[in-house]
Image 1 (spheres, rainbow, N blue to C red):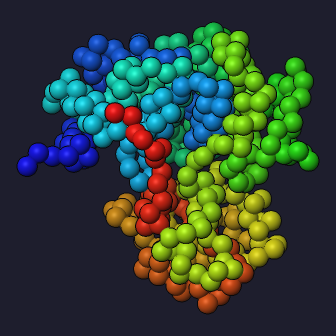
Image 2: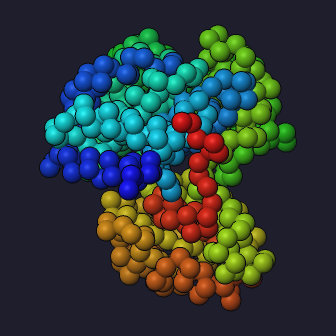
Length: 445
């Protein structure tokens, strides 16, 4: 019996994983080799906005995509990781790639690569470039996978614009143990003569980005210098040298989303010479319509929600590093002042649980730790619980699953908020369990 397109995709992805190099060396050599064998699809793309950063990349892409689509433009987008289905990573002209189109692209990459060593992300990025080159669009929003300087996406010679969201400690094994080193890797996407929008940074990171921009000749539009953003009565106030825009409240919850939305506004305003339909109206519509699952997403239906009293709120967020913990803290502080906050936490062993928990620990009424389902690299729930107790989160216990944790909290959850967080892999598992879609309808064939 012939395989379905979805089965072909799964089989191809598994087969390509076997070619993973024994040691991961961040290098562009493998990408250039396989792209050359595919006749360099990266040279046949729509204008590219290349996005790096530690936190906020996906949200920036979501707002920027919504603004462009509100103005009637067709948008390609490449993001990672996926939450439920791999197809989420590749959006063609506003629609998620179909299984057939994905399988065809992966088969071509497999044929072009042969049996040469190549990483999973390199394979899938090459397949994405191939797909992007075959479907018309006005702009491609291209998110970095890891770092920037030697990331598989950094083969675009002349993007239309680059963007660097907030930089913090993450992936230290690959990018360096200090913030300056990580910022240097992220700043590797800056290109000569290509403008860049830069989000909120620690001074150490900003200094590195400034030096890199000066050395390559990239003009920066930086939050706090060339533009600013803040909450206001109308929603969001954006200010730059050309004036002020009063916009709706950003669609994605959390005070940190003002920065991500502001970056998208700054990018759109600086691209209006090329994309003349971008207007204050389309920017406002983009603020209201942006969608990005598992970023402070309230879950309102499904089997997990049914485990809790009707007065309880269930929220999901993929936050998983120290910077994300710092960003979450103000929102959780506001929550804790109004309703008790219970947290269900699962994390992967490449992350820093103490760094993530420390900023939010004062606001947690009770913590349940779990193993991230199906992940061999998950931090054991008992170890997470020990770390939490060391941070003085006294009411901490381990649970066997998300559902078990919610059942255990149910009798104390009346009028409370419960937040599931710590891992995008965990977030994907929760969305799947709640039967919530993360893809656009009517995928592109």
